[in-house]
Image (cartoon, rainbow, N blue to C red; front, side, top):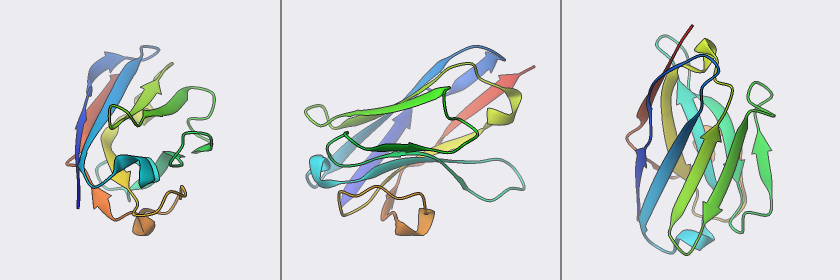
Length: 124
């Protein structure tokens, strides 16, 4: 079992930055592929970014590539999503997710554990 707790969301203006953190507890964190997803009202949950167990492999949605950076610290059991140059269309609830295997995935159904989400609101 893995418990995930996101933090760092908030209300910012377009062009600002936010740093989301996901704290993991439970089974060995370093074995898990991790991902960030987001969901806006009336829309399906969408993939944002993912990272493999070691942090050596990362992947981004085209909509955030070049603006967001995912990283992890296995010693601290945390994964971070640094979001720069935020746009109003980035407004959503952001969820941290973990897989039971170390390979990353862009598909929500392949993640086994989810956090409760943190709201990010970007005003224009």
